[in-house]
Length: 322
Image (cartoon, rainbow, N blue to C red; front, side):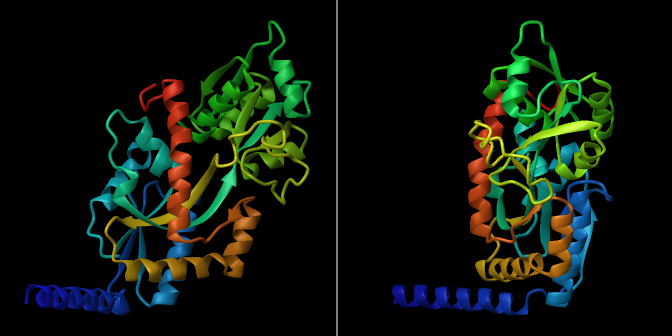
C-alpha cells in the first residue's frame, strides 16, 4: 500500500508540474537586470523580453535593480520563488566576478538555474601608439626591457579589464601597474596620451580608435578571431594559453529549483530568439558572438570559467574595497 501511495503522489506531482508548464506563463514575468538602465546588459534584456513576450503571450517586464556591482539584483532572483515568474538577465561581471570580490559571497552558482547564454565578447588588448610593438611577442619583449615601466588601465578595480590585465601580466611575466578609472572612456584618453601603455577593452569600445590610428590593437581573448577584426590573433595563437574562456557574457538565469518543464520551455524560446535575424545582426554589429545554447551548456561554461576568475582575484589580493 505504501508503494502504491508513493506512486500515486509521484504521478500527481508530475502531472501538476506538467500542467503548470503547459499554462506557463499565465501572468506577467519580471526580468531583473542587476544594472542601471541604459547599458548593454539592459538593452539586450529588453530585446529578449520583447521576444519572449511575443512568443509566450504574457508581459515580460524588465526591472533594473542596481547596486553592489550587480549583486543586489542577483540576490533578489536567488531568493525569489522558483516558479518562472522572476528571471535574471546578467553578465559574468555581476554574476560570477562580483560575488568573488566580496568577503562573504551574497549567492553561489547553485542558487541559480542557468537557462541560456545569449552572447559573449572577447576582451581586446590595445596599446599606446608609442609602444614599438605590433604583436604580443613584441609587446612582451618591450615590457621586459630594463627600465621599462608599464601601466595598464581598466574601468575600475575588479572589472573584467582589470582582472584580464593582471592575468596577462602574470602569464607574460612583465611588470605593470594597474591604474583604475571611472569607466573605459577616461582610460582610453590616457592610453592615447601615453599615461598608460595598454588596456583590455571590448572591440566595440576601442576599434573606432584603432581604425582612426589613435591606438593599436594586437590580440583578443577567447577561442576564435572576430569577423570585425579578422587580422587580430587570439592570445592563444600568440602563444598564451588559458585565455580561451576569458570573455564577457550575457545570459538568462532563473532561481534554482525551477521545474524542468518550465525551464525547457524558456530555454527553447530563448534559443529561438537568439537566432532571429534582428538579434543576430545586432550581436554581430557589436562585435560579439551569438550563442543561444542550452542551460546545461551555460552551466558548464560558468563552472569552467569561475576558477579562472577566482585564481586571478586571490593571486592579486583583489577585493571590492581595494
